[in-house]
Length: 409
Image (cartoon, rainbow, N blue to C red; front, side, top):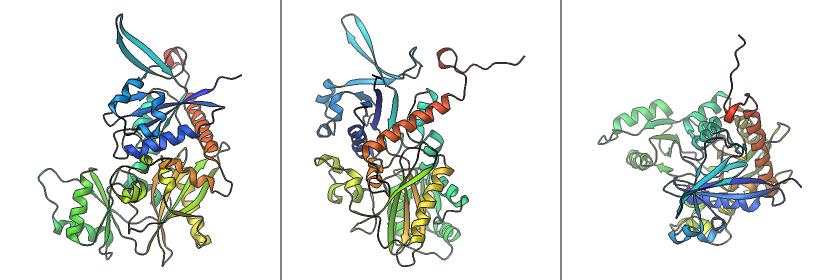
């Protein structure tokens, strides 16, 4: 009988989306096929320390208290290639005979860290550097989609409808935003499109830091708030009669890109921001993972496959999602979000989430060809092995995993 593969799922991190990432990581671990894989939790705490241990799989243990550390092992990722070829975590403990080194091998890593230092290509780049197999987008696609300005430029070049935007850089310390300069910049970016505007950090997800500005004072306040979270911020026109649509996309083993069900999030607030998505009742107190068997994004009120979505609108959503997936050579289960004016029917691609909340499994369960979460995790894992094998197979491997260049002379 073949030995089961060990799938390391890394979650948490130093992002403002830390708590949401914990839920996503635990959900993925719970949904792994126990007949094929053994799950290995890797929790990155807010200080950047890596931990592993069975206690990490219990939702009730979060936020992680110091007394739980005795049940865990602090680890580091071994960036060298072990003699047996399997990637591994290493830990060091002090004893009477000196320092003891322990290794924890695994076969593939699944990034489940949302936002900065996890979804932005930095983690993926480190894994590629160390030749460690991993699931989901490669570093280029992750970095490209994290930058909203760059992602929109790719969409625009690919013929996909997006809103115009004004990108602004955080002013130097002690420098104030000048309303007269801002007014000229708005005119240059939007022409006759006047207030209200939407302000967003350029490199954050989950609607973190998103605000609406109804006038110049509101715009300056929203910009200063967003600049606390990111050094680059974008301003976009506010879409009247706003309706949002989300869809997931992935690539099958055959190479074909497939899309999921379409959802229309239902909300009472004017904007579907971070609190509406993840905080119980939109109030402080942590994400919905702290209230029992929560489903995070999966518990958001939504309408799946909206009956009043026109055929041409559905085509635009599916075609645009597939095109963006292909243009950026994405991987895993990716969620693409759209904005619509419900009165005019106009649609714009909003953003691409390469590690969506809950891996968007609920969209695949409601797809034309339904897919369970267990089937989705297996597909993501197996694609990760294929993508990693394709990359590693493109070079001749020599001693210690190093590439050996042979001269014809």
